[in-house]
Length: 98
Image (tube, rainbow, N blue to C red):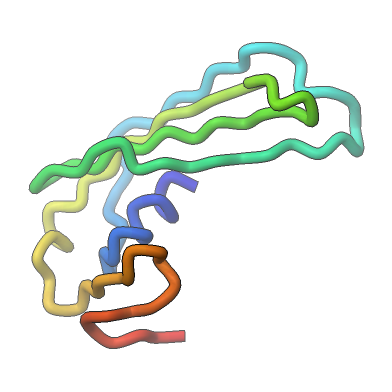
């Protein structure tokens, strides 16, 4: 999911993983229980992108989280990158591909 968080910034290529970690805070529930997941791009520089993914249970309690660092140096500033509208629903610069 960290790669998808990077892709929300319009990177045509989400890079190579340089670090991945996961922490399990508490039991997530029983088989069949539904978990929610939220991935956030916490920072992006010229070479590295940093993401965090949180998993919560039906009571909205944090049950696990992970971090994912990606090398994105080759895709920064690339001609195939796109730019999204503020709400993320439309491509406002670059070519949209399905």
